[in-house]
Length: 231
Image (cartoon, rainbow, N blue to C red):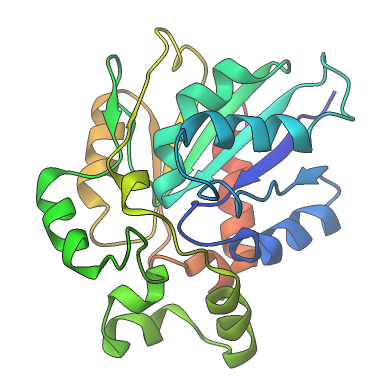
């Protein structure tokens, strides 16, 4: 039975960041799901249980024994262990795409102390601006090749509470006892890719900006399929 590919976006953005890749995979004959995490930050903490619940809810009509491949982008990489532990479906492979790497054991902080120092002055009444509003236009513009796609991605972004980035995510033991791999787009995720390689994971490089999956969905889909294939 071919696994269902579950494309999990970062809670900092929205599901449209995966829709072009989902279309490519569907056209190639793969079953694909793109859970929405857009309401994870509504009402305040707890946060990571809501991420798990959102993915579980998206798969509620899929028989429990059906295998899945988890594909996580960016900040969603930190939630991979709890997502896997919370599913009723066997996970045949996990692919982290330009993603933060969860700890092997012990709780994983969503943001480092240095990054929290950057975020705190941005917060107004405990809420942060949209992710793309954190950066200069010179940093944001290269991530988008199509103005319409940019509007969609920017407009659906949530304003997450600062407390979302202050949380620590538990790491269930043995979460990485299945084939895991890493797809690197570029800076600043080279270190995460190097750590993945040191863990014995397969690592591939598809040069691009952090949202390269919306610029080259065909190439991204091909790399995901290759990395997810059992060896």
